[in-house]
Image (cartoon, rainbow, N blue to C red; front, side, top):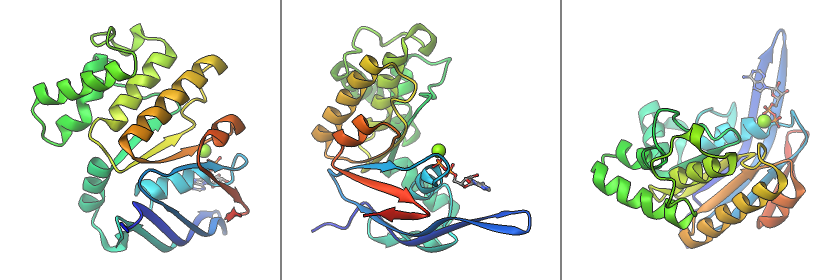
Length: 225
Ligand SMILES: Nc1ncnc2c1ncn2[C@@H]1O[C@H](COP(=O)(O)OP(=O)(O)O)[C@@H](O)[C@H]1O
Ligand SMILES: [Mg+2]
């Protein structure tokens, strides 16, 4: 059995707010393996984005441990954490966050180029992925020339292009109308199943949570059963 891609054990996160200490996460246990899909749900302010930041390694927990590919990340340097992110993670954001001056093809190639792939190879792999997502005819369009649903599919290609082990998505369909959201979610899940990637999605939308394998609901700093 391979180790989970990511495992959180007793993760606590506190923020200082004036003289008070705000304990946002109060002992979160969570793990995700290759091929698993997980919804992270909970009311606004319940700590979903904080949890995603810790999962990504962008924030450190106050206490508790985070294991990445079975290794405790507590002593990793910023460089080691950044390298793990670049190789092993893909992100999908609510607001797409494509580079406005780059084409769809260039946006989707970027993670591979940052890992040192030859531009021609990176573009070949990105083009194949964009084709799978129905964007074969949009390769040279810039983000402003694409609809919201098309932009998010470019962002999904960018998230998967370097074959990461884990995709983190924060409200990936939150900016899209219902019909477009359904199409984008279906594309995301189909690609994820094909790639065998672990996928964690922060969502308010019960329809999105229902389409995923498991739901971790944050309540009072903990994951409710
Ligand atoms: N950097 C920070 N400093 C202080 N408080 C923060 C910080 N980040 C988040 N919080 C607080 O932590 C709580 C959870 O925030 P967040 O993780 O963004 O919740 P959610 O994504 O579920 O809406 C909120 O009360 C928020 O104000
Ligand atoms: Mg949030």
